[in-house]
Amino acid sequence: MKTVLITGAGIGIGEATAHAFGKAGYRVIVTDILEAEGAAVAEAINAGGGTAEFHRLDVTSTEAANAVVAAVEAEHGALDVLVCNAGIAHKVPLDELTDEKWDHTFEIDLKGMIRVVRAAAPKMRTAKSGAIVCLSSIMGVAYGWDEHVHYSAAKSGVVGLVRGLGVELAKDGVRVNGVAPGYCRTAQALSVQHSLGPEGLEEAAEFIPMGRVGEPDDIADVILFLASDAARYMTGQVVTVDGGLLVGRY
Ligand SMILES: NC(=O)c1ccc[n+]([C@@H]2O[C@H](COP(=O)([O-])OP(=O)(O)OC[C@H]3O[C@@H](n4cnc5c(N)ncnc54)[C@H](O)[C@@H]3O)[C@@H](O)[C@H]2O)c1
Image (cartoon, rainbow, N blue to C red):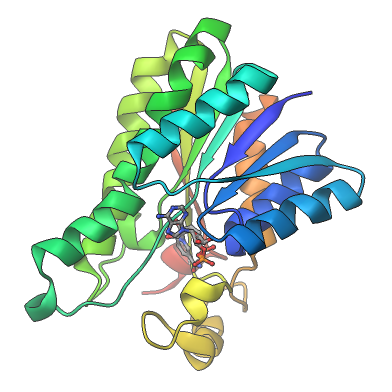
């Protein structure tokens, strides 16, 4: 049985991704700082006939990333797939964007990814196989987002992370790709304080060529594809999944 570890898998896109991999027959290592939500996701996968376990993992901690990956490897061997999904998108106008606020977002959205990759890569390289998928955003690959400069910068950073890792790990049979979601109906996008909110999401649906905002499943299925053998000749790429938003809005 192949093993996938997903960060931030208690809710939203991470939760949908956990279910997609569970249905595809993977052992799913659900990780999050949200312990009740994460445990419930693992429980639901197991109740549906799949295989899952929950581990608390705060991606701002190198020690925690090393410890969780080591514990999973000791039990199940090298990870086959790693999905770096955990992220925050706090609204902070430039005049309030202190070093602390900048660093907080980078610690989770960018450095939080390399911590887990760094822990999992050695055994993947030894196994000469593996796939890593990192979550960027349309705000990192094409759009600028006012009052979210730190978020846009971190999500652009994910593009560089995917490219660099893709090249460095290619010779060892480990592929690294990314997904850049458009507007997707999750707690993050539904936050009135930090993002579009429910009304903003409905308005966005009107200018999205496909006529609706994304659902977490829409993103999860592409992550599953990128991790699968169907994407065996792809590495270093970030795929936009946005219902035609970027190519259709002038
Ligand atoms: N929803 C969208 O419209 C959208 C668009 C583009 C990109 N994304 C990206 O997709 C990913 C998932 O977003 P979502 O919309 O599902 O958001 P969400 O807020 O619903 O879920 C984010 C998850 O990350 C977890 N998390 C936060 N801080 C963490 C930490 N320190 N350690 C471990 N986990 C932590 C949260 O607990 C939560 O489970 C994020 O990287 C986000 O930036 C989302």
